[in-house]
Length: 476
Image (cartoon, rainbow, N blue to C red; front, side, top):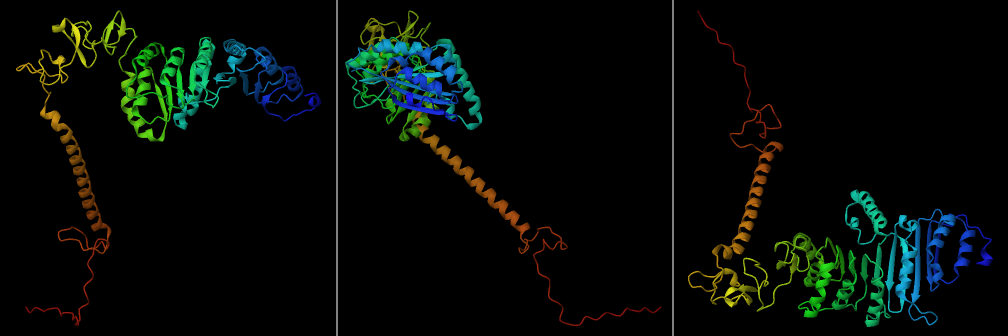
């Protein structure tokens, strides 16, 4: 910059540096001599860790960029750098700590860490409205008010914990989700309390996703550009066990899925995140399903029972049963259980606690098998006479699927027919009084002096001569 130190740019408001390689000292001299009218500043740095000095940036902005409104800073660090041994955890801590002073907090900066196989990117920029801001789905009349609420929320959140940090797992041909990558990733997540997770990698498996989520207890929003690869029909026992700690600790309230085409995929993430409040799906094929999901499934998910790990005092909030003030998983088959009226759902939905088998969980009985109580049968109906499980037959239940649509269709046709008849009568009545060329039917009252209401033509003139009769004289 030595040749450019004498220049003055009084109207310069925007600067953008890409892959910047000059030293911080040279850069600082350049900023000091140019105009202080800068409003937007963006810079991308390669390797030079001297730029990770938050205090120095603070002094530079206060003294020479007082009108700055938007600040974007990107620092790329490669793992295969032979000149320097890189400790990703230490670098991440240094980045977060350097930009956590009140100066940065008051400006509501959004900190993001992107991790690839060979490079990590530390970003800090002015807060941008993203998908996690639900006000973008609200009409324009309430946008300003909602925008203010969102900004106040972000400001208050920053003042309390100084931790609004996003972790992004990117997708590129150099990013291999192997064990070294996961271990490197875990070293970062243990040191930083991330609040947002963005996964844009089509090679992510469900086991790997559960492993990552179990290490991120403070995550509030989850974005998946690609649905993880896993068998939707049946998860392995190991995957189910891995999901349990995630269910117990996660605080995820907002989920966004990309390219979801199966109902089971969405249901899996609803069950994985019991505190979900917002769900977005980027798929044109799922628009109709989302309407149904909003109306039917989300209220159910909001008030669903807890599967495992939640605090409780009775069985009501638990999917199965409550023990030691904590929701428990169902008791396995042929294992000891409590009486039915103590914990009705302890054995799960397909089993029951059989007192004839020394209070152990047994499979529910099919039609025709011997039974004692209704809860021992799959149908829920133990015939009192034959003491066998029978189909819970009810004529009303059988005819209801047929009668209900029939009644609805009949009522609709009846209403349409009545409306057509009423409309025709109204139009016929109006026609008599609006057209002067229609002869009114007999019995219709009208006045001959009202030419508008008379439809008859005048009679022809009399063809003969009309003589005036002489007055009669009377003789006395």
